[in-house]
Image 1 (tube, rainbow, N blue to C red):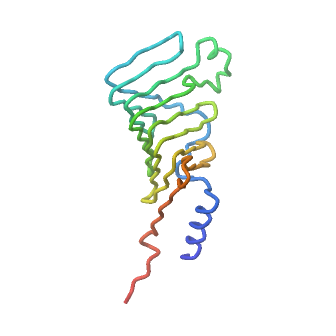
Image 2: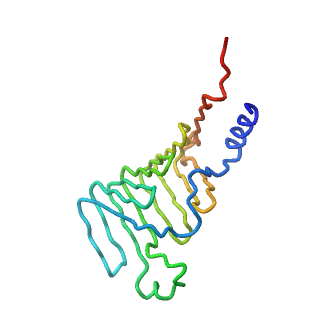
Image 3: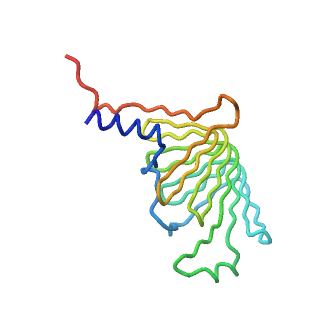
Length: 178
């Protein structure tokens, strides 16, 4: 058992497989998105709504905190052309400034985050850190594909910048010393 977990850990470090606990159910969520902020500005011409000041956006078990959040939505014309079974009102969401995303047992932070509804993908950039069950991965850019759970962490462009990961063994694996 101990060696199996060690092998899994080494595989993760070498290949960066998906963080499956982060994965969301396939397809668009039918749960409502609730957004609170100090200010809101709607721009129908751009099909967007801009929120600023202590922004908190929630959908199901996911919460996004940021200084600013812009929601881009499909126009009424486009919504009518999309198959009713696959309607996606929100096209993209862009968060900026002190971004923090919480879902279940993981937390991600960074300078900016972009959610792409059609691809069901989140991209967090700028000093990113992701914690899951006490373990942490950091880099300049974190990409999460929600349907598959696949994740990619990329380093910055500086000469010595690298992806860093810290893994802590669980308590159940430790043998009791007499």
